[in-house]
Every structure is written in C-alpha cells, then in structure tokens.
Length: 153
Image 1 (spheres, one colour):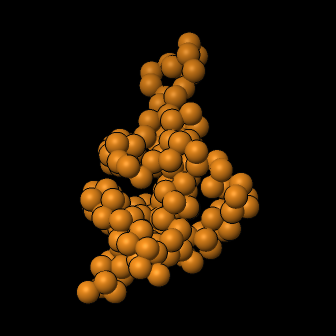
Image 2 (spheres, helix red, strand yellow; image 1 turned 120 degrees about the vertical axis):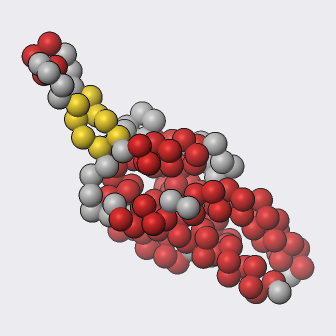
C-alpha cells in the first residue's frame, strides 16, 4: 500500500510541471472544439503550378511545440491504443473520462498520438483539437494531479 502511494506521488511530481505548461492552453482548446484549426494555402495561382499545403493556427503550433518538449510524450503510443483496444474517438474519450493517476501513461499515449502522430499526419493535430480529445486529456491530467494533491494532504 505504501509503495503504491509512493509510486503515485512520484508520478504526480514528475508530470506536474509539464501538465501546468499545457494547462494554459485549455481556454484556447475549449474555444476551438468543432472548429478546424487549419486551412489550405491557395495563394496566387498556386493550384495551377504547385500542390496546395496546410496552414495551421499559430496557437496550435505553439501547443504542439511545447507539448513535444515535455516528458509527457510517449513514442510508443501505438501500444497504448492496442493494449486498451482503442479503435474509435468515442472509446478514446471514454477511457480519458475514467482515468485516474494510475492511467497517466494511457493519457500520455493518447496525447502523444495527436502531437507526435501529427508530425507525419498533420490532420491529427486539427482532429485532436476539433473533436476535443486533446482538451479532454490535458484537462483530465490537470484534474488527476489536483485531486492527488488534495488527497495527500
């Protein structure tokens, strides 16, 4: 029992600074649910001579950059999805809602899918913001750490 508590305190201490960095984006994430945060650049005559490319919201890019530099990123996020049998956004969000401090690695995996996966599939950044998954993960991490801090005292 004591070892378990010690481990959970260690998890809380390790991730708290990173979660606090990302928590400042919660109001922006809330305002962007259901809204696309990217558009296709179609400058003067580009579609005739070249391929159009996506342009992302500056705040989204700041979030992605900052999240990518935290210890919350898990390069093995695909295993989190297979281990927890996450196949849909609904399943993903249900697991986020039910998460506790013991599932912090699962939350890290979901966040990593959107942040790291977006580096090769840029639509993941926009989808994560639009469907609310990124918001729910960051909010849940913050909530879990705050609850843990209150319960320890």
